[in-house]
Amino acid sequence: MGNHSSKTTNYYTCNYHVMFSSQKLITKNKMDFDEREHLGHVIIREIFEKNFSSNVHDILNRDTKILDIGCGSGFWLTEMAADFPKPSYIGVDMLPVFPTSTVPSNITFKQLNLLEGLPFEDNTFDFIHMQFLACDFTELQWETIVYKELARVLKPGGWLEICDPEFEFYNSGPTAKQINSAVCTYLRSRNVNPLIVQRHRSLIESIPSFSSSIVYHEKRHFPLGPYANKLGILGGFLTVKCCKDILLGPVGKIAKINTDINDILTREFDSHNTYFLVHRFYVQKKK
Ligand SMILES: C[S@@+](CC[C@H](N)C(=O)[O-])C[C@H]1O[C@@H](n2cnc3c(N)ncnc32)[C@H](O)[C@@H]1O
Image (cartoon, rainbow, N blue to C red; front, side, top):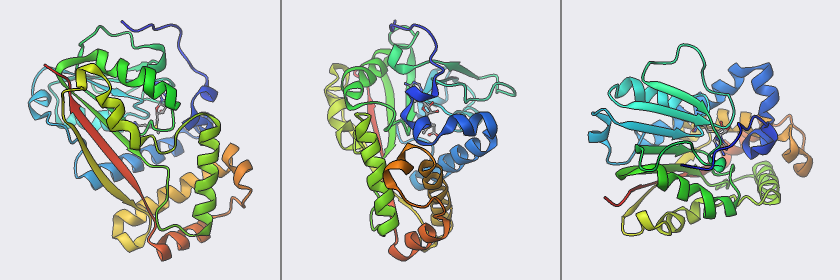
């Protein structure tokens, strides 16, 4: 079992929450936080056309165990548990951001920090999903803890799926460039590689129980403006909102730009056809 110790409830240990000043958002307006998470979940599902890419249809139609790491508000789990009711689902997050009431009977949420080691036996889960934690681990933690721990609790023959964005706007205008550069400076100051997705394949392949497996990779555009129809409008709306929230925290001190960016950023995204890239990697553990 992992070297699990005490619960971590400190928002300041998590880059994502520091960057978004989530503590304020969660304690004062959890609905705002949930709305952002829900919109992100819906857009990712739409651009990949489904909630997962791994070859897990058989797993999803049996009494199996499925783990979502860094589950946030739990939208992925809630949808999976409704679509595929036979498995038992566990959602893990280092902070108590997941639902505590009206939880479907096939989902259990636990407050746990992956970096402290998971309190599960080796070879427990048939499918492990982890989405949008690229900024939460230092490059060293990805290299030495994250994939090792995920591989340990995954059953032989089970599937691991990771979905992460690149912290890089493509076709960006001047405001987006400035924000992008400040985000990367902030992340690097916390020893986070903003383009860690470019290392996911080799990091997965370095784990012995994955080294003889094929690592599948899909990449999609996350469009940011009406140039890409309804999805682009939603993507732009969410990203402008995220940039605004981010500028209220430590990134704002680096970027030194006005936080009243709604109109200018929305126009820029649309006139430049701005987008960023989201990647999914999935791999089956050696049987
Ligand atoms: C960007 S949110 C993603 C939420 C969800 N997976 C999604 O795609 O909408 C990242 C989540 O990971 C959680 N997290 C960060 N570091 C973690 C860790 N070491 N162990 C468990 N959860 C962690 C954060 O608390 C946050 O809720």
